[in-house]
Image (cartoon, rainbow, N blue to C red; front, top):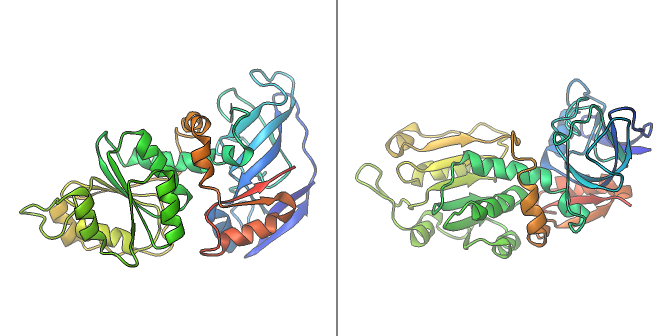
Length: 338
């Protein structure tokens, strides 16, 4: 069967590999959709991921159908729709340096354990929406890391898939008011459709002043100036100006959560931060959230579907990767299998 591999620095190609089968204790899955992640392009720039550098299979945002069960497997049936914890495969991280990638027609779960690698999802949910389970778990972990409480006022920088996923999770967690900030008008419009209370175009608006209008004045005798009463800022943008801007305007005791990948060092003024006692937390992956998000996707799949911008057939997967890696060309690209 054909599979998509990184074969060298900035080289992604079709590779012919053997189609797997299900042995004892194994589950064979037919991949039905797989999202493209920004990290796929990052892996390609690196030339792969050790120890498979130079021969790294791609695809870590899949949804799949169970097509074969090995001896001893319980709790699943052929035909089940499933979402996948790509970090719990015994042969390495699926699509992120392991021996398999989900930009392949079939993958096999070795050493299957009920409730660990797979979870059933309603057949009502379209495959490409079910494939959002992995990135939406990343977004949920970021929301959890930020320590959101009912009634909090939240600002999300970046209206890409993770930012929009975080918007949905913040709403479910009881945030009172959520503002999304971006520089692309179409993304801001989508944020409103997904459920933002307000949006700000940081290319044309004074962010701090606008947030004071929306969230109130959070300035104190110690932390003076134009300081919104925002409780939580989430950086899902990955540009240095975001944490720098938050450091200059955050109220005392606010939280900055960083889920975006910053490819260059970010300089912060600790004098600014000292008077605000700003809490800075980082978020990576989904230690517990991978299947916690599934219920909400099932219940609200039409809203999650808005996050997907492009649906591309598997035989054009290389085009899908190129599209996703082109800044401003697409938001969330999903590869669709037959």
